[in-house]
Amino acid sequence: MKTNNLLMVTTGYPYGQGESFVAAELAYMGQTFDTVTLVPCFFTPDKPPRDVAYAVDLAYARARWGGGRVFHVIKSFVEGLWRYQWLGEAGYILRHAHRLENLKELARTLYRARLFERFLEQQQAAGKHYDLVYFYWIVPEIAGALSFRQRSQVGEIHRSTIVARAHGGDLYEERRPGGYAGLTDVITTGLDAVFCISEHGKGYLIRKYPSLVQRFHLARLGVDDPGFVSPQPEDDALSILSCSFMVPGKRLHLIIDAIAVLLTQNPDLSIRWTHIGDGELFQQLQAQVARVLDGRRVEVIFKGYMQQSDVVAFYRESAFDVIINVSDCEGIPVSLMEASSAGIPMIATDVGGSGEIVNADNGVLIHEDADASTIAAALLKFYDRRLAAAYRVRALAYWQTHFNAQTNYGQFGQALHRSMEHL
Image 1: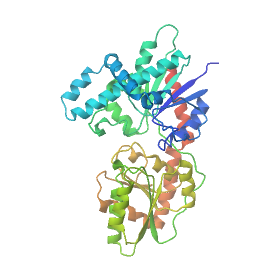
Image 2: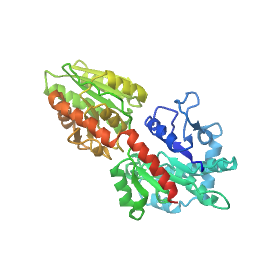
Image 3: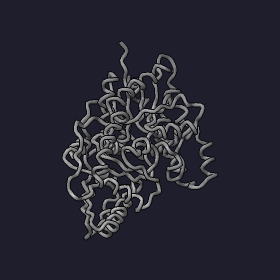
Image 4: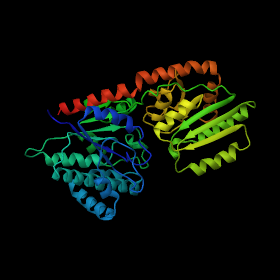
């Protein structure tokens, strides 16, 4: 019987704090493939990885970030200059704004692509073959995998399938700082399949590459059934939840401003805001809280980073009226899936695929440029707990039909196998 070997490329998982949602998917990948090997593009040597039941290969990450980094980067960049088709992209960059920033992006793409191609060459030399190379994000390394496959199709070398997921920040090129991502056309047209986590993302690719419509698929993420419904608050405070990294794109300052509006407009209202997650803006947000909310009828709880299992346990023990996400760009937030699975209503800005999880039945979808007053009005809606109770029921039901990990990842595993069969 043929063995199916999967190579899964992540940003850092199982290292670091990000990509916590990979764990649920991996549980089902292990049932679908005979062997699974994880290749993180980055890791921190002095911090232990999260527990996984699969092999983790650090050769690529060590070459990119280890002691010989400068040598490997320069060598890979020089080789990439003659290995990949980049002149057309350089011409495009020189004709448009953000030239220096985008030339650096192109250079990063070339060295990362070649460095990953060399990693695959080393794997092949060691007798390792993978039936499916699966990139969890659209990243420059894909160009290297495509080049490796093209150059290896001789003799008895078996052709690997190469696929990728497409989320948000990795997909929408115009949202990049310079509005450009290196070798995008090479990557997108070369992949055997792109699995988008949202209909919005799939539509975006179809508009850009209408001739490749058959390669673009919807494959939603999902979270497991927590086995409980989070309790509805019983005290007088409006209990608000948010969960994200503290980075500019999450626009957490808008939540602070909205709370200030609520307190001003409703003299008898008290508020409890709990945020899960940390990041570069932690001190800045703390300072804003002290400046805008200090001495008012509000309790602010910054929980910091929490592992996904701890978040689930926290939802079991804690009561929230609503979760809010005011990002300026999203795929579909996993934080909303987790809250929905526990029956917590949702508020989100209408960006990316957020409108595919938040709707008028289970929450409030607000304009991406909503001001503090608009956000405040949406939050106050869930202080009517008789009304909010129905939203809680519908939030749970919507998770069950659209974002249940057991259903979505089972179907995704089958889709990956179909992608191999169609070669």
